[in-house]
Length: 103
Image (cartoon, rainbow, N blue to C red; front, side, top):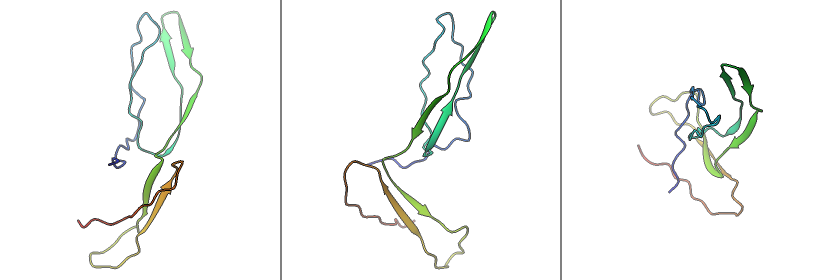
């Protein structure tokens, strides 16, 4: 079963990472669950210079997800419309059934 989107940090990619003599470093990261385009650039400093990387761009998205349009506020016992939109970017059509769990 797919995991719900839950990782939405305010910022990421802001850690200082020592590179060492080799001049490069692999840093494993988890991409936030935000469905958006990201742009990132890096810089480095050394005793004898300063380096800049070109900007890298990538898009993070889920190929299949449900988005709920919720009202700004609801009072207990109030009836309201809940709109659920199913997005399918998979290469094939699939049958889905969306249900609201009691909580």
